Image (cartoon, rainbow, N blue to C red; front, side, top):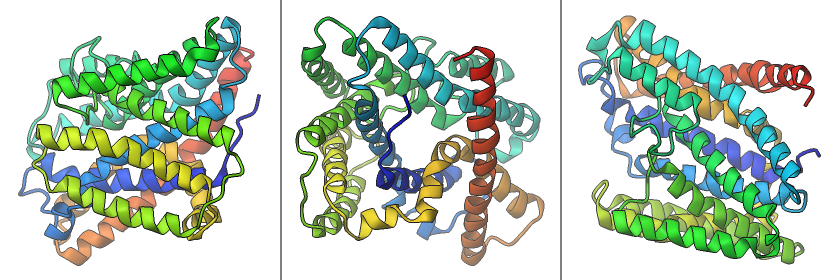
Length: 371
């Protein structure tokens, strides 16, 4: 079956991918020696950009909704489950493999040979182990230890696959009509685990726990959408929740990084807020949802997976080449221009990986295995 799409969600996904790019660009201060890169305070200390890592949770909520929207009724028997998992692997794995190999080459040829640029550099044996962790789709679980993903954004792909496995398996059991009760129990267990450990924003070893909470909420949003497909609410709710979200991000930023208080407040507010915002967008046709449906946003949504997985290499190479190797003066204006150049380059590069890896290479694999 073909994938059913809701265009406004595609545009939203494109915006979220760019937010992750800018957040990681801001994180460069934690990678490079201070004498290599000195980001201006408006970027490095920005209270909103500092918390944009949380939009990964929005990705998981969106994923739960889209997967339930497309596959809830088509998953009946075990063969359906096998087809579903193969299809998800074909969608996600080729680009993850390509970006993992690219990042491995980058690490060995650049980072390992120019350690003076970086605060810490792992030995090659550790890098190869992290690469195997990525290949095995285990880097959001503690199966191979807490190594940290080689290409940092790839942890969420591993977490997604855990969500797909659980969703698919419970959807083909004889107790399918009770599947959402099982999801509720799993979600509650994930919440209890986060409370017990005092952490919500996992991003590697237990990243699948964070993903499950958001993914299951996304499935619940679909259930409500399915029950009330014609629900319409005032378009002003879009702007109200945009203001609310801005305030929420600032509120979370007011707590000390990685403190238990911050993590538990985020556990309560972040997934539920994103789930409610998603349901609002599905029930409105206001300025924001119309914006997400314009041609540019649809293009960004189309290449958003490539933007998400490819950007981490380029946000290192481009600034360090321009500011350190070519010795461009590090002024606030130049930092803005380099950031815009980096975003533009990643979009162009991602369009190529979308065409030649996500589409062409995947088609060849399907033809090879007659899938």
